[in-house]
Structure formats: C-alpha cells, structure tokens
Image 1: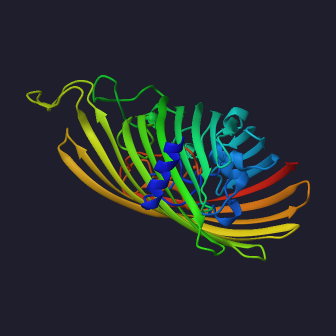
Image 2 (image 1 turned 30 degrees about the horizontal axis):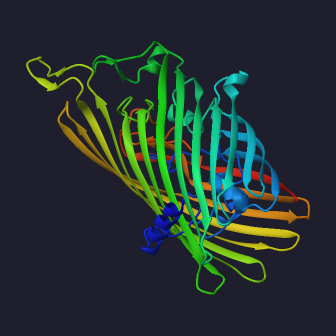
Image 3 (image 1 turned 120 degrees about the vertical axis):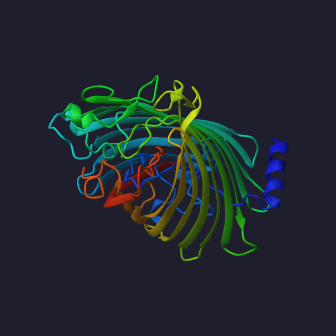
Length: 492
C-alpha cells in the first residue's frame, strides 16, 4: 500500500493529474443531442445546486457514493431520502423516483446501502394501456470498506439497475407504435482515498460498468417497419418481420480515475485536478432510425482531464469552478457475413469477415462548471451553471461502394441549478431545481426518417448514444425540468 501511495504522489508532483473528486468517472458518449432527462439522478449528486462543481470542492455524502473509499471521511452515520421528479417539455417523457439509503462509518469499517424505485413515463404514448404509458425501474447499491490507517481508506461498491426503460430511446424510433425495453445496468467500483501531510487529498478509482438492453420495436403496419436491416448471413436488405424488430444495446466500460486536491499556500483557496480513462466495447449498437448502418459494433477510448478551484469565506460563502476537456476516439463497423460480390458476380468486393463499412469518430468535448453557495446556521442557498460542448468529426468509409464521407457536428448542453435548504440539528431538507437546455428531439436533414427536419414524436444519463447519423443533424428543442428534495438525517 505504501508503494501505491508513493506512486500517486510521484505522478502528482509532475502535474500529470492534480484535482479530485468523483466527477466524470464514467464518460458518456453522444453523437446526437438527445434529451435523456435525469433518469439516473437516484442518489444525492455532487454539489447539485452549485452546478456540479467537484474537482476542488468536497461534498461528503455525494462523494462517498461516487467513490466508496470516501465513506471513511464520515464522522457520523447519515440516512438520506431523495424524491426526484423530472419532465421533458413537449410531451417527451418524464419520471418519478424515490430513493432511500444510508452510510455509516466506525473506527475501522464503513459501509452503506440504498434502493430506489422509479416510474418512467414514455414519450408520446400511443395507447392508453398502462404498460405502454409508463415503465418501472429499480435500483440497488451496496458498498463497504476499511480504513487502512489514519489517512488512507479502501472501499468497494456494487450498483445494479433493473430497467424496463431508458430515457431517450423512444425518440430514436419516432415511427414506432410501441417500444418494449428490458435489461439491466451494472456498475462495480474499487477505490482508494487518502490524505497527505500537506493537507491535500488523493483518490484512485477503478470501475467496470455494463449496459445490456433489448428494444422490441413494433410498428402499426408492415410498411412502417420497412427501415432496412442487414440479414445475418449477407448484406441483403430485408425486413426482420412484418411489423416488429428486436434490437440489442450492449456496452462494456472499464475505467480508471485519478484525482488530487490541496490548499493553495496559506489561503482559503483550494485547487485540484482529475485524470480519467474509459475503454468501452460496443458489442451491439441498436438500429435506430436516425442511423444508416444497422447493428454496427465498435470500441471507444475516452479520456478527460480537468482543473478546478474553490474557496470558502468566513461568512459561509463558497465559490467553485471546474474546467474539463474530453478527447474521445471511437471506431464502429459492419462485418461481412459472406463474400460480397459486384453486381455481375465476377469480383469479390469484400471477403467474409472483413469490414464493409467503417466509422471513425474523433471527439473534443469540453465542460465548464461554476457555482456559488451560502451556508448559514439554519439555511443554505446555492446557484450554479454548467455547459458541456460536444464536438466531433465522423469519417465514414464504405468499402463495398468505394465511397467516403466526412461529417462534423457540435452543440452545447446547458444546465442551470438552484438550491434552497433548511438546516436543523437533527435533519437537513434541501430543494433543488434543475433546467437542462440545448437538447431535444434530434433528426437528420437528409435522412428519410425525419419530419420537418426533426422527429415529430428523448441522463446525465448513464447510457451511450453512439451511432453514425445518416445526414446533417437537426434539432427540435426540448428542455428538461427536474425537481429534487433531499432529506438527510445525521445520526450521532
């Protein structure tokens, strides 16, 4: 363990990473500005009212849920309850969530447990059947760990979600009559948290996450299901059935997150940094109507590096800011199930097992967060804003048609937050309002699946939407409005 700590300190001294906190440990991918909502806001998020600022600003309860080793920082047990409601404008869905949980820490051992139930309303329901109007999701997490001395802790966490629906999926099948989703998400983490003699903190977190969903898409008539798909044994375009299609959505993520923060000289300021690596495999990408290449698998390398600062004055006013850059490289493709011949069958264009179409994505995303808060004896007020800009270039090679195309896209998603709370000796009650703008119902200008350059019929989602659009993106704007009440009971 001493060797691990020494290695972390050596890296920090060279400035390779320097700020902390369990932010952006899972880097989610988007190739279209889908309004997914706050489906996975099932636990107290980090400094929600202050725009999610976290690199150099602690949030003891939320940090412990993101990196289980930080549960060792607690000096008392805490029970929390979080009712959360969100709605996407223009009838694009919403959800109601109730989560309860608790964390406790002793002299050596610490742990926590929580559950959440969620009722999700589907976007633009087509019938009055209860199963078509809403879906039920259930979440469970358990964590524990041990202090390895006076300044170091080791912790692990298991998170499971049984899902009947994921936000945003409905709007990527705009011509469907009904969509049935079924699957799960898994997130396993092992973390180290430590304190240094200079007042600084460091963290190391490893994780594995899996998304495994099935979309059964039904259409009103055979002609509505005529979106082409490739047969399993050739590139012949065929419908999967007269009026339905079954799509798989599978992604595996391996991650490493490093963080460090410390006081700035003798002042009230702190500074810090993070470095995160995600490697993703995409065994199955759904055949969304917005894409032109069905069922392309792929893999992704995603990184982020961030800097942050914060300060707290004697009057209880806190300010914080984070800047994060996210370079991402993703490659998806289609493999030939048989030899692909030219039209007169005199020449093999692509041999069996080789790539027929290949997509190369290069992202350079960025995130800026800032917030201010005041905490008094009996009340708190917080306000914040964050902006994430997505930028990517798609290079697509068609080895059958011997064609090449390039596409560039960018957009910014804005999040505005405001919190107000009442503080008592035995309970803390906080209300937070969140508004997300810059997302909505995506479509493509040149695609055949778009009405009026956008879908006429979609958290920080945890799912990935990585697919090659079949033309320049268009957007019908939709905002996400979220209300969350947090009730925390310290048990001394």
